[in-house]
Length: 518
Image 1 (tube, rainbow, N blue to C red):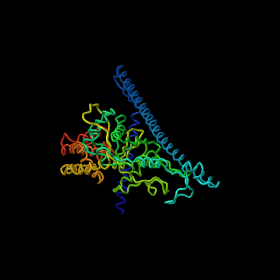
Image 2 (image 1 turned 60 degrees about the horizontal axis):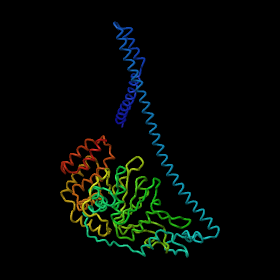
Image 3 (image 1 turned 90 degrees about the vertical axis):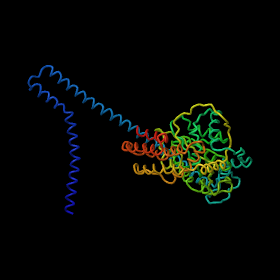
Image 4 (image 1 turned 135 degrees about the horizontal axis):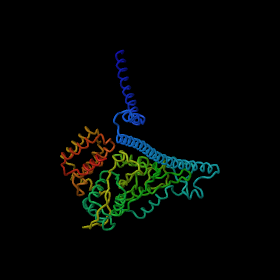
């Protein structure tokens, strides 16, 4: 042990001594650099005491000194300027973050105070000997006191706590809906017909590539994210798709204050015993009565943290068996609850897809890998170019059953080839060795679902793989320190060209080149 302590003492002493010398020498150099007296002494040494120092020599010496003094003043000025700018920027950033936190805190306080107010009112009502459900409270949808147990009878003369959902029950009981349009089209026709319909009827122009990615995304995930710069038609695409499918897409505007599922689904008012039904819940419930495709738009979905307000939906959709998809609505059951709410839970309709739009700027939150891995992200950064539609473009109802059958048919007819799979494996091995990045079974399953449908929509398998590689795997490189990965990124570009050819995988190579320019 004596030898070890001697070794450790000498090594540590040398290490910390080196740090001290660096700090000391750096400080001394700065002092020497700004030592004005030193410059004056040198001038005096060579001027007054030296021999043969002419007037011109004195003039040039003074000129150099003035130039050095000016440089010192400029250096000090810019150091102070940049320091003040940084401090102002940092202060503004901190104030902005504090303001957002204060707003969130105030929203939570308001919600908490409302709940406390409801509890106080309920206690006052109980002291007066009244029962919620009588007179005005009954008309407002109150329920008998002492609720909370399962399968209880609703009080007499009390309307349901779900006013909007009961209205949906009545409407569809009187007018049941079933798709009656002929289901005699394929995926390629869907792409062409929608593009012509959007152009002719809505004056909206989309590239076939974007539409193929959209339909293929529906085959891959229940969540589609349309992201990019503002004004490129991210919201108008699912809106136009709803018009084309003869069932208007539901537009849900996400608010920055959303922190939990009650903002999206609604909540039960403990005082009135009435459920505050959101438009999202109503449209989700209405979809249980329909057999066509419904798109629900979460506009500006990353204005709030998606994992907060959408967490339950993400968890539900993660279950492998759709029969197990259930959304908790209320903790108990009343006899006059809506028809499709069973034991307080709503069976999730499988004919619903969520389309979120996202702007990438300072006013939004970063979408996490948890969300990206479960969704299909489609970048839209360019405006569509006007064109003259050729061929049919008539709106049509599309049943969920027929759409799923088209997806299944595409997976059988155009499976990912073994050759393409082997090439992708080579690329995966390279990513593991050089970037310590890989992907799980979920992403591989999505790739094998996406590519066949993309081919059935009129694309090629190599372009489908290019899209999925860029949005699912290469996107993760943005989290790395790009300045340290320059050489590996260049090697990756060369590897892609070697495996797939120089004329292929353009999206992937363009994405990597943009990373190099950062």
